[in-house]
Image 1 (tube, one colour):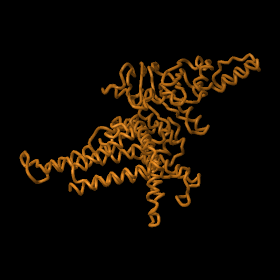
Image 2 (cartoon, chains in turn brown, blue):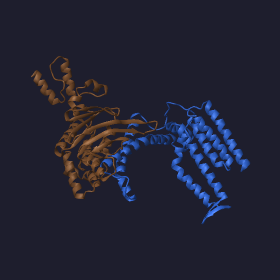
Image 3 (cartoon, chains in turn purple, cyan):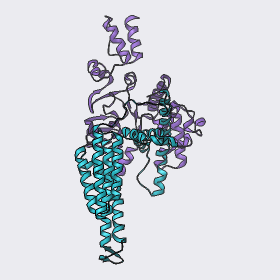
Image 4 (spheres, rainbow over the protein chains, first blue to last red):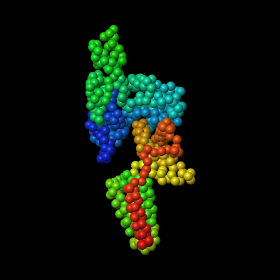
Length: 282
Length: 251
């Protein structure tokens, strides 16, 4: 699914003393199958933006088009399109409510009007996709699981709706390093298994550099940079001004270059850094 | 007015509310209305804030008016089938409506010119004489403070969960009453879980700062009556006397 955002503007509590412009004339396009990293410091409008993408918030002006159809319309077509755009909020484990994991994951597909069998089938499949032992976990209470497991169940709840676009708002917030890596690896494997378009909101530049095909940078409700990670992460000065940092591999290479070693500084990941270090020092 | 001692303001509001029930003639409402108008002008609170407080109970006011209008027996003015409007009914209806509106304005003015925390502090101090009778005034005030403090937090939480469930296809708006009630489960269960989590965190944080109830607790900002409070009390006494005189003269 191709998502086009055109001149999107959103203002919170318009006309009140607390009026804030959350988004101002934001425009971009997400081609089918791309992995987009959305970065920007806290309060830059990322969360507001992604809530527009599946029609949870209505824009003051501008449009969000999914395959050419306005997602904010009330028609059946746009409703079914909205359902193809799965949104996983921050700390999604706080939305779990059912008695068993299976029932909770079934909540989404059930709302799509599917039969019990298909719901369960999809739920089991989604649980396996997020890397849980589906048979073991299906009849347990979601409240008895560990934090990382709860989060996987919540993500499975969105995956079970069979989205074409998956939007994740800081899916690794508050997890330990292992949980963090597990979730990211999971996202990558889901993407390969389902051929999904993914939009990842993150504060971790290493993750964005490693995973994303395109990077969007937000600041004060506007889109200030857009492009492949390599073209974004060489603009160090500008990123620093926005309160953002560089991937640690890039920082390492810059330090080496600063000491006079002839290394490339447009390196993004640990693997690339390794290659480059071996090339120069090996 | 914003900086008066909360105790003065609470007692003042109390006196004003009681005075509204003592009034038995329109002239009394005239005095009360003028008094309140003066206070509002001094406080600088825009009128639209006060009218906003009126909105939720507008239904109650209209309902009371209608009941009084049609149900009071007396000299009929006009009649419509079995319903008839009487002179006494018209009088009672407008009387009641005026009283309710003034009640609401008076009490909203208190909350508009006082910070919630100061308000509960003031209540705590006013209730403290009853401690000997076993009334846990500090605990009551603390409970009120916490409840007020967490209203926005819980509203935020509700909004977040609602959005998350909507993203999973939940529908909170359509269907009959039963379906709607059932539709609230995905909202209420996580909300309760969150509320308990927040409460546990708060309890932990309070204990970590050695909170152990009101016994022997001192305050950072003590309360003291000032010149302005004496002045306010004098005006209040004058007003109360005025209302009382009107009641006796006209009643």
